[in-house]
Image (tube, rainbow, N blue to C red):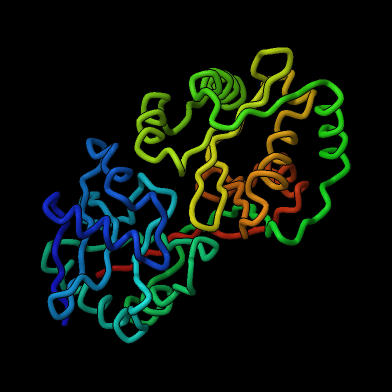
Length: 312
């Protein structure tokens, strides 16, 4: 029998301590990350206690009568430590549905954490929501991931641009200026898609100040000025490219290739995975073939980011 408690700030220390020891959590689940945009979301995160001990946690927020895996995060799902068993999780979701009905909820939108982020296998929730909640797959995005230890050969056009970067004095700086890169990013997104980054510069600078070891900015320079950059989220075993952009000079002189060479072969060669993120639009219905081909050219292949739904 579980005691289910809605998160309030008085549980912050317990929440963060659990995230630190969980087998499928990343720094995105610390409250210092989750709460930076608390004004945009009605937080409805849950803590599950069993025999007085914190058993597991669920980052979530409320939209009307729907409980959602937190939309302010790339992924969500049940956060578990090494002691959580499949029997526990099946019982937990049965009791969660009863709890949600009593709270007036009618539906759940659930986004599990992709397996590449698991320190130990952690797909008990996928089994439980299928059998106990009759969940159905409602949305699927495709991301691109490299198994770093495979050392797959880059495609010829990437190798050609990397050689051009070397020949033309392109330099890569770790922990570089976010503000310099944000100008390139904003201009590129506006020009190509009429869009803006999900994070403002001020938000990203705030998050970086809170997680300086996890959020790292790489910029490429030529003749003293920026030509491109990548914002990386570094978790325990995944180097994730959160934002990437170049100007025309950066495309011509291999800014991305120079940065990825630095990441893959110098700074993080022992990491299991490099995750390029999603290349789909219109909620997964359309693949940006040029973008995903660019990522596949480094040796990346598909990992899905799923959303499940069920009625309670």
